[in-house]
Length: 444
Ligand SMILES: [Zn+2]
Image 1: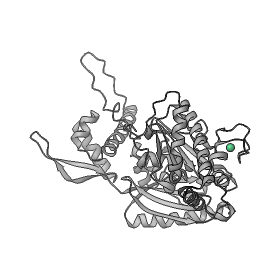
Image 2: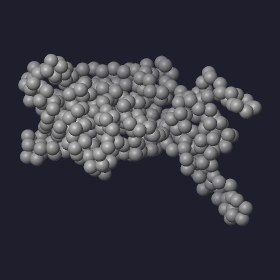
Image 3: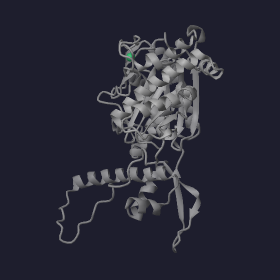
């Protein structure tokens, strides 16, 4: 997998205002506009400097100045503001420049700002608090079947879990900057509304509104679990060095998340990435979506288990079915191996089409596909070799999730951190106790 700068904002092109050169016209000052302009430039530069610290791990003020083209004094003033906001701190280690001068002190990300991730899964509720350095400060999963529960009851239970997490965060002097909520369904991201979640049998639920009422003071973002899982893998998981990839999330069905040029790609209405409903067998088995021959009718875990002869009803939870499949595959059960081969081939065909369409670098297999990967990867690679027009994909182009089943809730915590990285000044508004979700610059 190639290395490249990832989600960090570019350091170039956001430098200070250029001074007029000899012979160039000097604009007459326009005070009001000038002030607005200075604020915009400073805010952009604040993001640039924070991005430098984030992407370099440790960095000195001098190195940031050299990298960004900003003056040393501008960098120092921006760093002071970032330190005031609690986003950056000085490390113990000092750097002695080769030439004469004061020794510099390294800067690193502070671990005070945290994102709060929440997840409503068909079979569990989860909460996760993650800081800017990638450490999980609090996490809790409650196994509960949400299939027959009213949305209000589920949200109330989740809100109580979030309150406990927020209270613990406050005890540790952490600063929550936003809440992400991962759900297994289609989401109108701009309104924070769950449009439909077939496995929960929910539709048209204003989840963001319900949560803001219960947890006032923090912006809430709702998105599909696979989009969040892809974001988590890109932030700290197996896709951290990738710019363009497809994340395929195996569960009862098959979900997907797409990253293009380091940003999530959701499509016109936010419904993109539904890799599970790509047709791989025209006229094949009926799918829950109403179509036939979708990828999830061949490679969804339920389909794999059915062909392997595992009675689904008796197995209960999704992870139990995965464990049973792994057990049978390990002992060489023929029906299970054949079923996994068929799933791998279908998965490979769908991924090859996505790569041909979008010119992606890699595919990451997540959810139940990660533990099943030893029996899937060869067939997926084979299908890519046969089906990707450009060819030449490295073996590492098929990767497996590092974050496993936590990926969705981790991604939900990462979203507010990602946005903070791009717009650190936002913290001033949170500090005033008047969060403005609309100013949470939406990226991607
Ligand atoms: Zn379908």
